[in-house]
Length: 180
Image (tube, rainbow, N blue to C red; front, top):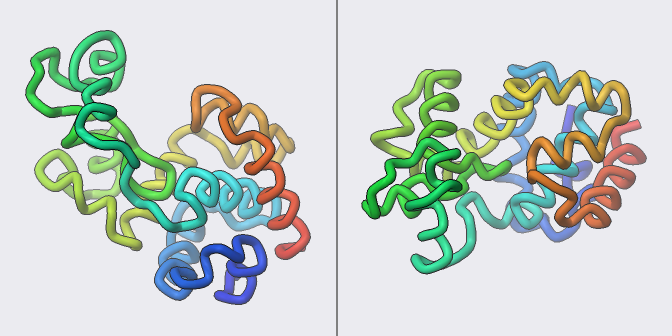
């Protein structure tokens, strides 16, 4: 079980928010079977990086930046409408693992039993920020990859590449020590 002290040992920068997130993280990790030290370490490393050490539950960037999700091939791949109707703003990355795009919000909402199409901002709240990240982890079968120590493959599934690899690995190694 994750404690505030363990969470702070893994992510010292999360100290001001650790108390808000420890219970939702524990509940979400239990719900989606992220229960071994290997799984938990990999999960916490990824959400730690993606959320800026639990600082952000909404993607950074203004309207101009988020417009990249509104039209074109990326928008279509994410299930956003082809019109310039602010889908990019509405379905920007949210939650600890940054669920992005209308299609992913729809799938995540279905998986969690909530209407994220009508209320995408719900993923900014600690409980659903954690549950959405754990749902994504489960949906992408990342427990199996964590069991095999396939950390770079996990990073590609989450990020599409190896963005922030060194930071993710540092978090992973720290989490392995703390959770062992």
